[in-house]
Length: 269
Image 1: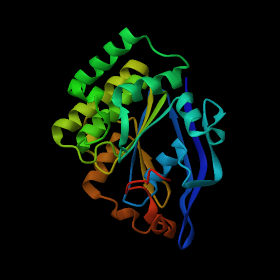
Image 2: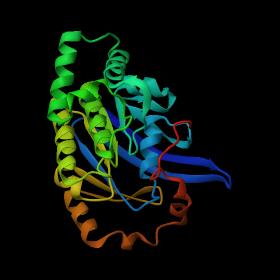
Image 3: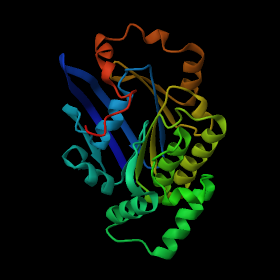
């Protein structure tokens, strides 16, 4: 069974005001087939965790470990992490002018598997996934995310998830900007990917509405760059009713996380 394990993770970021701590000792274990939801107020470190797992160079790990099936993730380059089975669905998917969805997907699949997929079976898989995500066939030949609406970009992220078949998926506020219909379609895609591959999911969200469609096995409350409370799906319902007021006296480092990625990350970073 595959396991993604995070132990005592500390992360900082450089700003004009100096080095700022973001994560302050995160411990988390995600096993194959499990869904873990991370909830918390803005600036609590949720997106920083996502980008650190993916290998964004903006974030510096000063202490702790991330391992995937015992292998040191922090020693891997971004592409090595992808080939090892890690996938990040970004809160703000970037546009890639000049690169069609078709070319992007097949190139990514080839890089991950080490060989190009059969054209006939690949085209069939792409069409089936697009149909299930209610994406018009024309999106296959459009440049990646270029001119896409917010909902179309999120569906395109889940299209990648279904086709690339990672071991673990980090979904960074995939529900943001989605109307009810789009939320259902995207959630169905995530559940379908899990059923077909048994992947583990780390789902970052502010709200419980997506958790009505993607039911978590575990819920973790993020405050001040660490896990402040853990529980089952009932914890999410409690947060929906009570909010985060009982965590307002959390340690000061939470306020240093004004740079946590609840805003778009520059493609130049």
